[in-house]
Amino acid sequence: MAEIFVLVDHANGAVRKTTAEMLTIAARLGEPAAVFLGAGAKEAQATLAKFGATKVYAMDSADLTDYLVAPQAEFLAALVSKLKPAALLIPANPAGKEIAARVAIKTDSGLITDAIDVQPGADGIETTQSVFAGSYAVKARITKGTPIICVKPNSAAPQEKSGAAQIVPVNLTISADAKTAKIVESTEKKSTGRPELTEAAIVVSGGRGTAGDFAPVEAFADSLGAAVGASRAAVDAGWYPHTSQVGQTGKQVSPQLYVACGISGAIQHRAGMQTSKTIVAVNKDPEAPIFELVDFGVVGDLFSVLPQATEAVTASKG
Amino acid sequence: MNIVVCVKYVPDAQADRGFDEADLTTNRESVDGLLSELDEYAVEEALKLAEAGEGEVTVVTIGPDKAADAIKKALQMGADKGVHISDEAIRGSDAFATSRILAEAIKKLGTPDLVLTGMASTDGTMGVVPAMLAERLGLPQVTFASELSLDGEGVTIRRDGDAASETITSPRPALVSVTDQINEPRYPSFKGIMAAKKKPVETWSLADLGIDPTTVGSAGAYTEVLSVTKRPPRAQGEIVTDEGDGGTKLAAFLASRKFI
Image 1 (cartoon, rainbow over the protein chains, first blue to last red):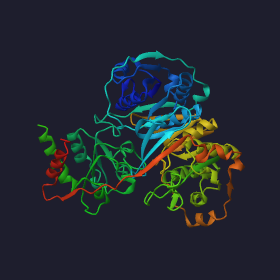
Image 2: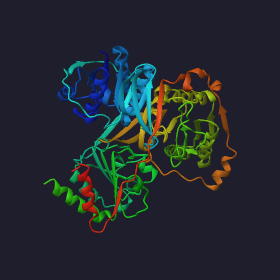
Image 3: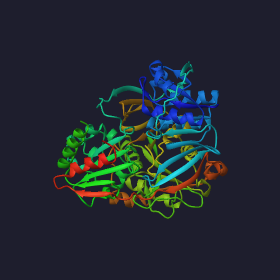
Image 4: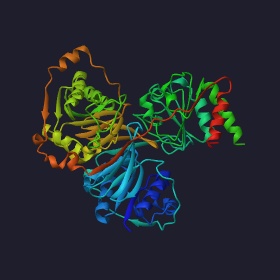
């Protein structure tokens, strides 16, 4: 069976949920083989084995991790050229897409980004994408080279499947040309203890209506074990970090449940959450465009509604 | 210092965006378009750098006739000249071809000190052309900048990721892409609008770039769109007004949908 490469999405060996999702997708298409760049392959092995990886091609080198994108792309392209997998799956985050982009050029292959589904088709692998703020579903396929597909989080339910995850060390010399954009400093973000925004099953977001006070939004999110997002207005006002921004110029999320609090629902925001399975909104303004999208809406002050809801949710959990 | 900014003319997100039934390409003709919002930040950054360092800003775009509007807006903001690449054969191009055409145009202009782009277009939203350009031009890739500074022979940016905030530095020339956090794009002044009318804009075809038309466009694409399906608009569910029980009702809804 042909190998399907999966670029492991990890933070120092802690494997992210997106990797399990991609391994599950890979198993539909062929034999999943993980590619692990950086430190922590041994720590990650058990998780990779649990979701079906037969092998783990690994390289740990400062050359790979001290420079932005280019060395990783060079490594992957060389591995693809040498081992000729049937496809390459990469997480659809900014770095992942840039790595995929450069591998596509190096290997003269077609590239699809932001796939929300990947299935074997009669004529090759078929991808599904959600475009134009979720108003269209597009099915496509790659017609040249090794299909390279960037997969969005929450695109597959991870399925456990036992794999050998045999670590195969690969040593490639990274060229000087790839080592030009150096990461001279890295400041880790303080962990909030909440799930990551694009991976979370539930997202609760705050907007202009919070007037800068996200406490009720955060409390409600915590009662649900949710991630916290923010509208562009909230981020521009400095109330919440840009990495939490949901919208056209921020993150696009598609969780099971999206709760918009004090967010009017302008197209800029909708582009970031319109494909969520269930949408709920709380807003003082009955005319807010967000209400056109909702499965349930409350016209009211989030400072009254959210604390009451938080209490009810917490009570229901016993 | 010479700077080239790559910009895109995109269908207005407020309008009814869709696809051409015949060839499943993005409909660019019957929908109003404009300079992609994320590209404004790139133009603004180029203008700031050029103003500080006495340089020239050239704006490049690929697109049908109306795409000239994207260049016009950039010139009105203060860019010095424009290049509009237009050719029937480009229709249906994927990112692979787009990056190739842009790379050839940049080489023809004489690779500048900096190539600037936005972080992604607001229609395709792939965010891959900047990296592809860096690859094709052999330039250091310094992308997703939320802060940027030039120092001597190099460029330094701050790139904010989910796990960490990184400081990245490279020598110049370099390819830089910027996010919407980097600056506040200026509104064209009246003086700028008038001055733009006299600024030079060249129009290039594929032949001017020495590109074989069969290697770009739908003919040369490495991907194939199989189908596009319009999603039915979401049906509006129940809306209640808070009368002291809004939160309770919200929790009840969540329970009914098994979220709690």
